[in-house]
Image 1 (spheres, rainbow, N blue to C red):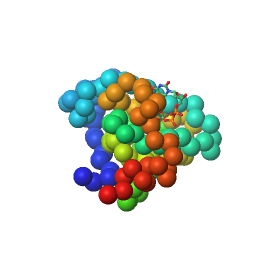
Image 2: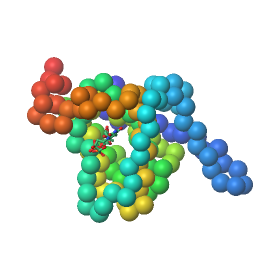
Image 3: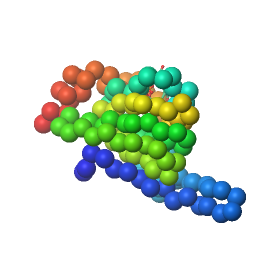
Image 4: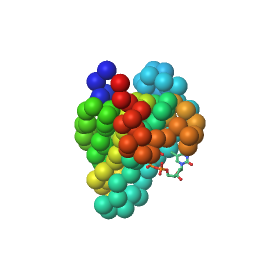
Length: 133
Ligand code: T46
């Protein structure tokens, strides 16, 4: 599977504006058990710097923009999240970092599991070791 998988969310627009629907097991490929969002990130701050052992997530900037680095251990790719209709899949065992948050950025994340700190790999060396074939 390719490292970067964008998901385009259709906007249901009418004369009043736009509405986007995201449904678990429909728009995204997993059941959504948790939703969180990141906002008010201070200038110059980067976040993430981890991989998840089992968790699958979809991230979308519902306001503003940020860059996300995705890394499967063999290949890295930087993606720009800059639209409320453009999500990106953060699959399990993908090292990810978020950079260059705009002041107005609201990064919404849909997650396949409840929060579990033991699912995180926060050391890059440990991640590289774990993805070695
Ligand atoms: C991810 C990227 C995209 C909780 O208590 N429950 C939660 O559901 C989450 C997501 C976080 N937390 C706590 C853990 C830390 O004390 O909130 C604090 C900040 O979390 P963290 O430093 O992991 O934040 P980021 O922005 O580095 O990473 C977050 C998610 O944690 C992570 O799963 O993939 O966003």
